[in-house]
Image (tube, rainbow, N blue to C red; front, side, top):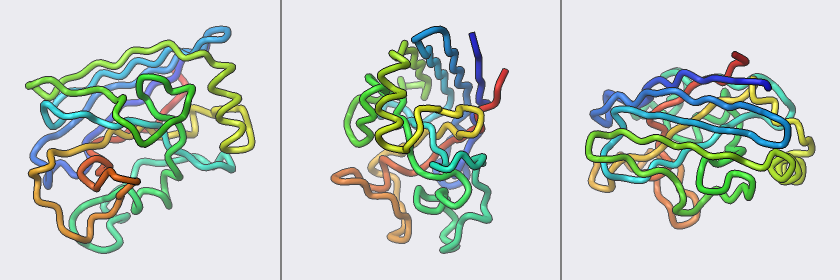
Length: 184
């Protein structure tokens, strides 16, 4: 068995009013990838998209800092994360192996901003989908970053905050926490 862990730290906390944090673990065992994410202090009572991001070429992805706020609006939005974290790769949703990013199948925080996500993924199926999308079946988890996204619809965001994906606006895609995945 191979185990990976990410300590997930707040992003945009001063702007959204919560300091989302938690832990993600990934355990590869035969043809199964067990993923467990536990988050605290996320915006309450809303769905939180979560994914791992990375670079197709296998370059190490990193958590963004305020240096990535290139438009200087005080927010690190989804497009601004790409130079250091790469692209969205695998959703941590109700079926990661399907790699269906924009949909409503992600965890929902309770009234305290807590949620726990726990899923067993058929590894061969995920690797095949990953290869179709990125050219290699190697997930290279230790080169990826876990992101948690989502703020309430009534939070005022400046027009400069980007990240619309299909019919989902920046409230859905705004990063609220991230952590680099490391081999345990």
